[in-house]
Image (cartoon, rainbow, N blue to C red; front, side, top):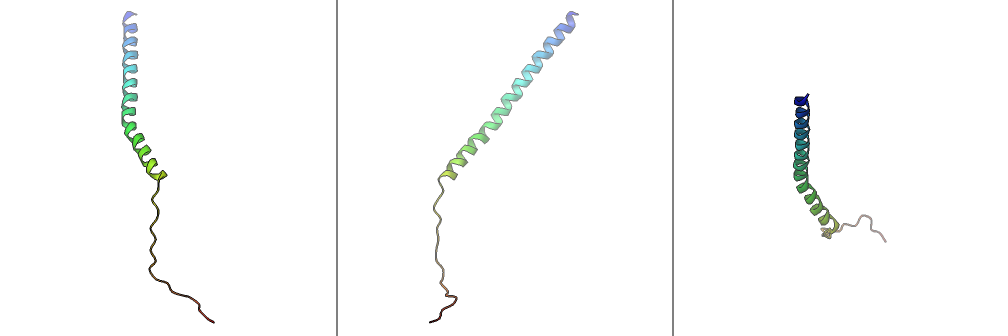
Length: 64
């Protein structure tokens, strides 16, 4: 009986440790993507003015 209690305790400890480790790794992997998306959003909020150049003017219908 004592061995099963010890085994369950170790299993719970390992499961808890692995779960915390996976959450930590997931957060460390996702953090740079989150920061990058914030940097991208900031540049989209301040767009550059478009540059327009006039190449040629061609009248289509001209009569008096």
